[in-house]
Structure formats: C-alpha cells, structure tokens
Length: 609
Image 1 (tube, one colour):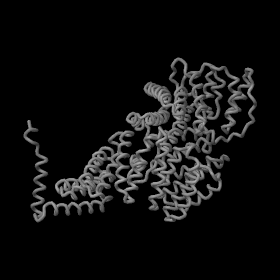
Image 2 (cartoon, one colour; image 1 turned 90 degrees about the vertical axis):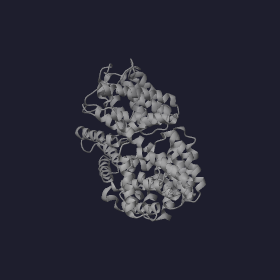
Image 3 (cartoon, rainbow, N blue to C red; image 1 turned 180 degrees about the horizontal axis):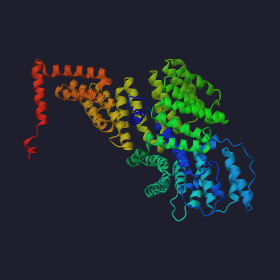
Image 4 (cartoon, one colour; image 1 turned 45 degrees about the vertical axis):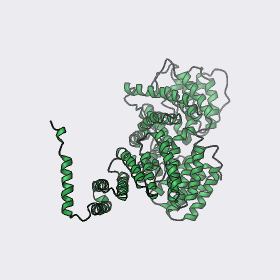
C-alpha cells in the first residue's frame, strides 16, 4: 500500500494521480456497507425499517437503531417501482403507517425516495425517532449518490440530528447525523461548521469504541469515513499537520479488507449469494484489491458482481461503471485489446456530453498508449478534453483530476507541451478551490519536472522550489513527496552544472526518504547514488566513496532480485576508488579502508567507563 501511495503522490519522476477523491469515495462506501452489515447482523431483514416503524416510540440508543438503513443499495434496488400516494396531513392509522413504510422502502430512485418521504413524515410526530431515522436515510442516500444539492443534504442531516440527539446521546445514529451534517457543510465550504460536527462525531466514536458498545459491532469502518472527512476539512482550513494525523488513521486498505469480507459473509448468509447487497460488497472488494495491486482478485470480484447485477436485472450506471472498472483492470493486467473492446461497448451506452463518456475515452487512450497507437490515443484525449472543458465550472475538482491523468498520458507520448498546458490550466483551477490546496504542490511539482525534461531547467527549478514549499505546508517537511521534489531539484541543478547545490538537494531528499521510505527502498538507493555522483563531480571523492558504499550495501540487501543493480553499483565503486587513490596499490587501499573501519568500531576513551 505504501508503494502505491508513494507512486501516486510523489510529484516527481513517476506518474501523478489524486487518490483523495477515489479513496474517500471507497472508504465512505466501505464505512456505509460494513457498518450497515454489522449493524444488521441480528436482523433477518436488510431492506426495511419494520423494527423501527413498528417498535415503540422510545427506541433504545444502540447501533441497531439504523439496522435497516439500506441506503448504500438504493442504486441496485430490485424491488419493483411503486406508485407513491400524495401525503395526507391527518395522522395515519397503524395499518396506513405500515403501508407507508413499505412504499418508502420500495423506492428505487431518488425522485421516488423524495416523493415518498412527505407521506411518511405526515404520519409521525415531529419528535418521533423513526422520523429522525427516515431523515437520516434520505440524507445519506443523497450524499451517497453525490447529489449537488448540499443544502438539502444539510437540512436532512440537521433535522435528523435534532430528533436523534437527545440528552447528549452517543448512539451510532447520532454519529451518522453528525457525519452527514459535517459532509454537507464541507461541500458548502462552511469549514468551521464542518469541523465542529465531525469532531463531535469523532469523540462519540472514541467513546463507543472504548466502552465496547457491542461485541458484534465494529466502529472502525465508520471511523474511517469520519477521519477522512476530518483530514479534508482541516486541509481546507490550512491545518495541514493536524490533517496529516487524521489521514494516517484512515489510509489502510489492508485493515478495510477483512471488514469488507465480513460484510460479504453476513450478506451471503442473510440474503443469499445473488443479492444486490452481495454485488455491492464484491464491488467494494474490487476497489480494495485494486488499491492493493492484486488485480487478478479485483477482476474476479468485478466479474462476480456483474453476474449478480445482470441476474437481478440491474442496469444503468451501476453496471456501466462495473464495465468501465473491468476495462481499467484489464489495462493494469496488460490485456489492452480486452480493455478496448469493453470500452467500445460502454461508449455506445453513454450520452455524448457526459462525464462518464469523457472518462471512458481517457481509459481507452491509456490502453492505446500502451500499444503505441499514439494518433488514436490523442484523438480519444481530444474528445475527452472537449467534454471536460464544459464541466470546469460545475465539477472543477473532478476536471482537475482528469486533466492530470490526461497530462500523464501526453507525457508518455512525449507530447510535453500539451501536458504542461493542461497542468497549468489545472493549477489555475486549483487555486480557486480551498479544499484542494494540498493538491497544488503535486501539480506544480509535475509542471516543474516536465519543464526540466523539455530543457527549460531554470523555469523548472522555480516550479519545483515553490512545489516543495507548498508540500511542506500541506504535509510537513518530512513527507516523502517533499523528498521526491528535492531529488528532482538535485537533478535539475546537476543539469545546470551546479553540483554543490545538487548535493545539498540530494542530501535533503535522502534524509527524508531514509525515514519515510527506508534506506533500502529502491528510490532511496537511487537518491543515494545521485548524491555519490554529485560529490564525485565536485571532486569530493571521500564523501563520494562513503555514499557509493552505502549504495552497494543497500542493493546487496535485496539479494538476487537486484543482481544487475548491485553489479553496476560495484562498478561505480571501483571507479571511484581508482580516482580517489590514484596510483596506490589495491592492497594499500584495502588496508586503509580496513583501518578506517576498525577505528570507527573502537569506542573513544571519552566513551569508556
């Protein structure tokens, strides 16, 4: 996982991407699915609110309060559409209430859910907790489908909170209401409000976890979602160091994997192998396995989920997205023809100006790039950029993410000017999005590196220096991304024939990478090699020998997998020895090195007692 994130976020010589939105979406989905699964473990039904709507008005505060909030599976609902009656303002009889409950739970689209809610609302007292839970379900559904109506989401979240949060309650339903209000406030750029809601949700979770609210309920997946949103909110407020603490608490797909597998087993037992909830679980497993770079397992889960969806008659965006993800996994596995064929079928099902269509063409371009079919790839990217250009004011964050991915494809085709142009456009957009400030450093670092590759070294250095400062503000001075930028600055200074400045940058990069990646990580070793080369250029052979020896030792620790690298490093070491010791014989050199080694190992008199 660490290698994956380092590769994505480094901002240096490797491809850049922005996992924040994808990972946040995955973790929110994980939290929703696993929380819902674990909370319903003792309930035979996963689709209704029967226990809540038929229970007493005074409901116990426990995780089972929201045991039947099946909001994650709304999009895959297989219950036939129902005709929704107009709400009545008279109080409903019990049988009417049961009917309304069934109608509300049968809703399979957002319009049906929203139109069915008023009738249910009219049948319950304003302070009835069942109404609070219904408000929560509607709000969570709107958040799950990424509705742009954040004011409406906030309204449902606050209303649920007012009803459910009595006497400073510490139930999971209150946590979800706080999370919903915090998320909506964040999207409305009301960051102080968001921080207040989320901090309280976090405190309640800590209390529930320490008290062991239920031996069969795990609050960790819910905590993942809250921690991720806290990280984003604090980043938007400029509290980068605090945000980093929250981020570290939630970036662990290996921890999410057993939780999702547990959810899958629960759903298989309760609902059967071919239920839509099982399809959801398998889609989430696909996301996790992809993040862990276990692509064969990811493809297996994708195919199983598609099979279930088709057997249930589920189509639309869910099946379409599954097909797109299958193509991406094919690309990761090197099966480019299969990916292209899949994507061609998907394109025919998309609207001409849709964001989905644009993303399909990006994926198709990636497959074509890997086949060296550059003209076809560029045509796909031109179509994609034409669509995204019209979305810049509506979804700037998503467009920036797409532009950066497109830039990396242009870079792979050696079209650096187009890549730089798109990145500069992305950077200008990012400066207007407070919650995306942490991404500015990555984009600026990418621009600097491409400028360096195109011979505009001085401009590249300015960009890289600015990127380093922004990265330090966002993630702290010891973040591995800062190390990569320093490494690239060192390469730029070497290109400008300034080995002393280069050595300073390589040394800074090595210090960071030793801690964040480890001294035996391949990138750390390469940086150490660059440092040795810089000292060699300066004529500082003693220092060059010291770091070259570290390179040899580090590659040797990799065993047979690094045989070629070790041979090359040893060759450089021998060349340095000849330059450093001139005409001295090998025996004299070895004796000097041996003596120096013994002196290092003998403690000084001051250190003896």
